[in-house]
Image 1 (tube, rainbow, N blue to C red):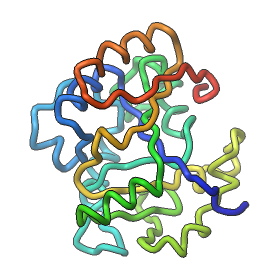
Image 2 (cartoon, helix red, strand yellow):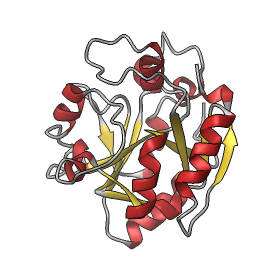
Image 3 (cartoon, rainbow, N blue to C red):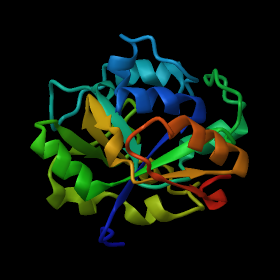
Image 4 (cartoon, rainbow, N blue to C red):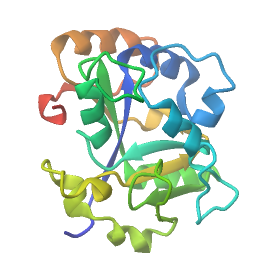
Length: 212
């Protein structure tokens, strides 16, 4: 499958994190979050977050995965499935997928912003939290991502490729979020309330097909 003409990237967060993201006017990387008193629910696995803080990128050897804000290239990620099952022994969050929202952005616009602001970026061909992964920082290699795996809903045989990531150094500006996808009307209303104080108001869509 060829590279999409207009690739999108997705970051998932608990809805109760939105107000602090809007207040900061950005998403922070994990390395920065551990230095701050961040409000809201953490949905990741602590052991993987710790490993990401020391997983160095081959494309930027002095930059670790945890120094970057991570995105998937698709909604309905493998991680969201783990969250939806709420039974993984390393997952401390057990609130299910309903309160999780997808922040959608445009890849080309994001890279343009990163280049303008001298912030490094990279993409991986699989899960950047694993003990081994490959990464690139050249768009001519974007076709190396398994786009069929990224787009498939039946990912059991394509788990590694499905988890390809886009990483941007330190922070991701709130103004680049083009849309927020939620599962229910209730979370739609919570999202609307959480972002109302911000100057930037991305569209909010109820997207049950982005969930399990």
